[in-house]
Image 1: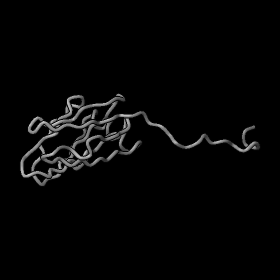
Image 2 (image 1 turned 30 degrees about the vertical axis):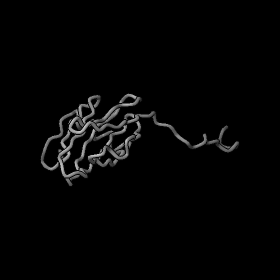
Image 3 (image 1 turned 45 degrees about the vertical axis):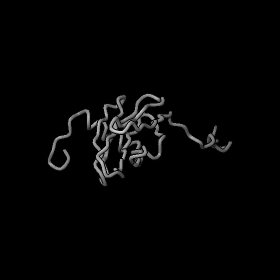
Image 4 (image 1 turned 135 degrees about the vertical axis):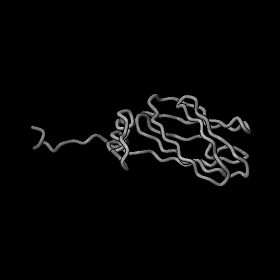
Length: 124
């Protein structure tokens, strides 16, 4: 229950992932010249919170067919979009209003940390 509302089971699963793994926050600017940045990178199975700022005097949009995202981006407004990418790969996002597009790259979770070794006294 949140703010007096019951969370449906599917959303409660998402909420559990958010608390266990965090949320990836990404900002994109939508202008008459295109999306900036044009390519964004996220990690699979970690919820994404995408903030799209409308930096045009016109209403634009952002669509990502692979994630069922269709959002109107109003002039001088910030729109929030959330989704969970589950399959690594390169996905297109676009706005048919002015033909702009970009790429969302979903990568596997990797660790740049070297493996930890236990001291000889603890490994026995």
